[in-house]
Image (tube, rainbow, N blue to C red; front, side, top):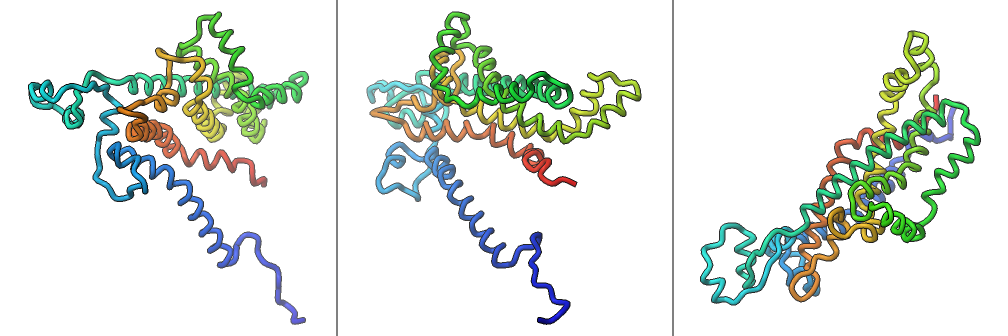
Length: 318
């Protein structure tokens, strides 16, 4: 065997074939995950007949009927009555009259969408706020039965929502929290706080204690050191945790169906009950789903750098 020739392969630089295969698999996975999203967006701009045609239409004439049906309620009228009306003033009115209907008023989608914003972001703020304080306590102080308490906190996420739905419903009915925004915020906060504590504890464990000790030697109190030293360094973890908590609160369906019906109902249980003439109005359902995706998508894209750092934080130790 010839000397000075290494047969070892680097674990850092993959071979060209490996990179090509990995890139192909990633592209294939991205395509598979994007197809349902693209189909929903395309369905939202189809007419009702095109949305249920078989075989499905890929080439079609775009229509705003789905969005108009999402934001308005309509009533069918006789052609003579519609002909006697003044000219249509907007697109939705024109679409309705083309189907021998008139716009009767606004739908409840906007209030439900606002409820989703308030409840999801409110519960996320509370979950992350309480979670970072609890995680700091578990990370820095000697808490009796720490491991048992952490396991108990984590165990709250092990049971399916339906297992506790009835007890929570009865409790909320007695407390007057059914169909209220504050009730949903507190419930989602209680569910998310276990995830927040476990994620944030890992981030805070990675922050050296010497930073806080140096700050307290300089005259800072424990609270000041926590606010001015720990929190800035834990920003990546806080943002990553907030994204995960927000995704759960934004998409949650089971509790929203059981505990809300009108004032505090969110968009997920409202979108499936959009009924059109003769059945489900699929373009309106797709339009509501498309708009529902926008806030969480924008929030995640804006904070994607923090999310990527948060997922890989602590993976490489020096």
